[in-house]
Image 1 (cartoon, rainbow over the protein chains, first blue to last red):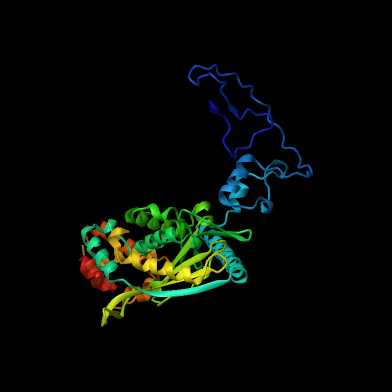
Image 2 (cartoon, helix red, strand yellow; image 1 turned 60 degrees about the horizontal axis):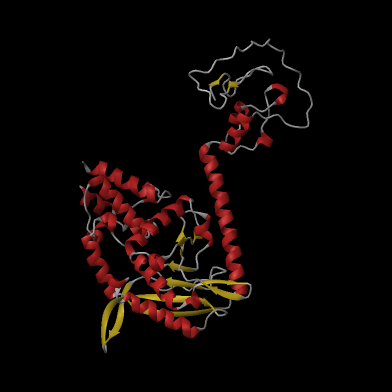
Length: 325
Length: 77
């Protein structure tokens, strides 16, 4: 566009030149400016009954930006056309609007959770297993590692747990992937859904992709970014739809263990409770050590309890060698 | 910086992480994490923010000294 002659929102007679455009190859500096004939002012036409509402494109755009429902806007322009000012008057105060959106989002989320969990409990024959995993080595290794790191580069135990689950799934593909059309379709990659609770209520479980192939540092960055975006409501649809397994860490709330519900069409969900000092027998001696209860809820159509038990044992083994994660 | 200014900054960071927080209801000497729902990721983000404001490194071994609002203000003062 070379020149805008009429500002959005300004009222001009029909036929007024609104703007000058340049032809391809023309340059604004050198192009000849055509003479624009001044138009005779016209008397505003009487508002004719019209089936179609007149809405100026600028008003339409403005309504879209503000989230104003055009159906409810009374037009004050010629022939009751809706103008930018009309839209502006209908603007809902920003905080009220935000509250409405939050409420609607919470309601949508509740019904989405209800639908998915209802379907899971109706369709998936779950079996549940749990194992207490000693966490002394992992805790000591993490403390040493974090002591070497600046605060901005520190790791959380959750990252070690995610990596251990993903590596274990490499040996137990029957617990990874989707159950579709009456059969289990295993996945080679572990796209691990991380259950994240939201402050306004509800939860989401978006995926960190290819967890088995990521370093602990990469995983920490992914997790931190994912939590931030989940809480800001800016997750990508692929992250929401493609986890091949889910991990829920309810230890933060202080519970000892969690037996979760599988998110269909996935076939397994792993839970971790609180890491706490508990009595632990090692080499015939009773001592106090940090432990965590790891649990598995799995789809009996895709795997059996024996496999599930071996899978949990593999997670426990991996967590004893944190430096290799 | 005096304690009042530090306290204001700490509260501002807490509110950024937990917008539902009502300042008036926060007890100075009760454990923060009993009063506000902060998971370990929230806690780390909170400490990173305090580090960025104060320049203090805050080693992990000292997290346990930072249990209450007044303890955090003391630590940063």
